[in-house]
Structure formats: C-alpha cells, structure tokens
Image (cartoon, rainbow, N blue to C red; front, side, top):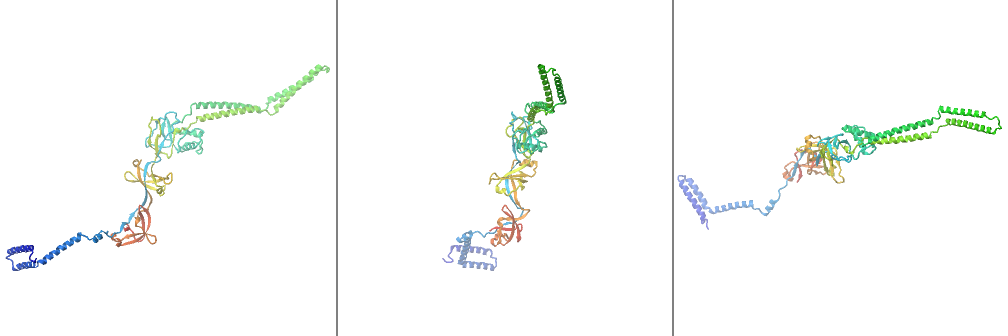
Length: 542
C-alpha cells in the first residue's frame, strides 16, 4: 500500500480540507499571507504522511514503556525492592529525676494483734450468763477496765501475756503468780516482791485492793470459813492459858523451898530433938526392970528416927528441885498451842481473798480496741466473747525470703489509700517463715491516720511499696541497655549527635560515665569524660 492508499488517512485529510474550505470562505476577506500559511501546513502534513505515522507509533511505544516500567517489575527488581531499608539507630533520651528501687507487696490493714477473748467459766458452778458491761465495737480496754460481767462478777482487764489458767489462792506458786504481782505493780497496788513466785498473804491482800479499784467486792471465802476462823481463835486462846499454867508450875518447881517451908522444917527438927531429949530423960531408974528398959529404948529409937526424918526433910529443901514433871507439862502445853496456831493460820488462809481465773483477763499492749462482740446481755457465754486488737492500725503482708533480705526494721514505705492517695508507714517487724524458703511476714506501722482514713482502710487489702534503695535527689539516668564497656572496663554511653535514622552513618560520640543506683531497668549515670545532659539521645541498639 502506498503512502496515499490509506482510506482513513484520506478521510482525515478530506475532512481537514473541508474544514479549510469553510475557513477559507469565512476569512475570504483575510490577507493573502494567512491563506498562504495554512496552505503551507497542509502541504507539510500531506506530503509527509508516513513520517507522521512513525512518530505517532513512537509516542504510543514510549507511553506503554513508561506504564510497564511503573507497574511491571523484573525478578531482580522485585528481589531488590523486597530488601528492608538501611536500619537507623535505636535511641532513648537521657532522663533526669529521682530513681528508686522498690519492693512491692499486698498488705492487709487491721488493728494490730487481733485476738479472741475467751473466759474461763468452769469455776462458776452454774450457767455463765452475761449480766452486764457488754462493750461496744470500738470501745477501748485499759488496765482495770471491766471487759464483761458474767453472773454478776466482773472480768477485770490486767496487763500480761499468760492466760488466767487457774484460780490463785494462798500458798500457790508459779509464773502466773509473778505475772499477777507485776500486773499489780503496773496499776499501783502493792502485792509483794514481784520476783517472788509465791502467792502469800500480801498478794492475797492485793486482790481485795484490786476489786476495790474496779468497784466490786472481792470474792467471798468458802461457806463457814468465818466460823472456822473463830473456833480456831478460841482454840489458840485455850492453849495459851494451859501453857501459862504449866509454865507457872515449872517456875514454882524450879524456885526451891520457900522460907516458910525452911522454917517449918527447922521447927520440925527442933521439936523432934526435944521429944528425943524428953524420952532420953525418962530412962527407968531400975535398970533391972527389963520390960521398962525395953520400952524406953524403943521410945528413944522412935524419937531418934523422928529427928533423922526431920533433918532429912530439911536437907531436901536445900537440894536442887526436880522439875522434870513441870517441864513435861510445859512442853505438852506448848505443842497444844502450836497445833492451835497452825489450825488458826489454815483457817485464816482459807478465808483470804482468792483470784478466780474467770474474773481476770490478761492482755498485752494495753489499751486494746474491741473489734467484735459475740455476746449480748442475758446470753449464756459460750466460746469467744469478743475480739480485741491493739489500739493502733498495722499493715501485714508476706514477702519472698530473697526480698525480705533487702528490708530492715525501720525502713520507710507507702501504701495506697482508697481515695487514690498514698500514706507513709514504717517497717515494724520482719518474721521469718517456719522453714527455709517459706515467705516472711512483714509488719508495718502507718503514720497517724485521721478517723476517716482509719475507717476507710480498715480491713482492706492495699498495695505497699517499700523503697530498698533511692538516690538522694534527682539524677541523670539511662536504660541499663545503653551501657557498654570500654577497653579498660569503664562504663560508657554512645550519644547520637546527628539523625539516628542515618544508622551507622549517624554522627555519635562516646561519653565515659560512672554508674550509681540501678532500679527498674534504669541506672544512674554521671559523666566523667565527656558531656551528658537530659534529653541527649543514647544508643540502646542497632
């Protein structure tokens, strides 16, 4: 096909020619130069039709190439475009502030040392009916307070650790006696030497003073005890009279003969001698009269015997008296009196005041707060009568043994309040677990709480934070991951001067630092070689 054989091209040219004719008609009044210019363009177009077709094809090919290059990738180009771009540096800013390393636990808020109060009612001999003095929840129990009245008798509060496990009576001994004496000393009552563990008369007398201070009468002695004491006192009196009589007899027996007795003995001797002389003078005149002579001799012998007997009796008055019988009488009277006195002592001891186990309540750390009351007036007492606790609120929680090793008594802490605030507390005690590896018990004492705050936190489980290390003020700190070791083992950080997105091409500088407290993945740093300030970007990864 020749260059002029294209029908479509001929159609276009014909249309263009028709248009030219119309235009020529419209501009017939135009100048000849315009007509000539139009005619020239027509000749250029019609005379180079093949060239224009090639040019159009080239334009179409160019556009198609651009489109293919934009949306269709070769395998190599596709692989190249799938590679990630060059990575930048991972940085974090240097921060400035206080740094703290904390141990965090959960703690129960309650009044300290809550204990159930039970009362020994075994000695009542009947139903243990609560008859009065039932405390309200929140009431405070002080020394000498009456915690409860059971069957008309008080339960008096005293300071002490041992429970009242038996009634105390004269002559008993043991650690509970020592505790009673110490409690009496604490409330200003003299119960004797607190170091002595014997419940003596002075301790028994202190029982009466105790009940008087509490406003009650002391426990009465057993029935008939007063009559026994009276009878024993009478027995002592009679024994004393008997002893006095026996001693008088002994005194008389040991005093020897009286002057009257001596005189009577001397008179008896003189009279016997006179009688002997009379008899001797009556000797018969006729010695041949044997019968008369025999009678005289017999009378002389009798008279001589009377003189000898009178003299012997007189001699006996000068000899030491025999007091054995009188002394035996005195000894018997003394034994009788001793027996009577022992009986009186026993009777009086039996009549001394006793301290019933059910009428005293020993509690430590007084005053105590009543947390719960389990009885009402008129109810028979069974089980725990009430629950009491210390007057101060305490926080208790458990902690792992490793964390407990970081704490010490006196450490400061804070715990959360229900209103979103915080309140200070102090570590009061650290109690190890019963065996190795078991969790420890941490006891903390809050600073003074308002009444409203105490009511809000009572019985709650709160978060407790205990700093185990902190900076003295605000310091510069960076993540631990930002630290690197220098050739001499020194700690360093790399500070980015340029754009971290430039990766390894980014401009950086090394700053030698001294490290301090580390807490929560952060570490305190102080520049020792180079400059470092808040907001500087340090490298933590590439």
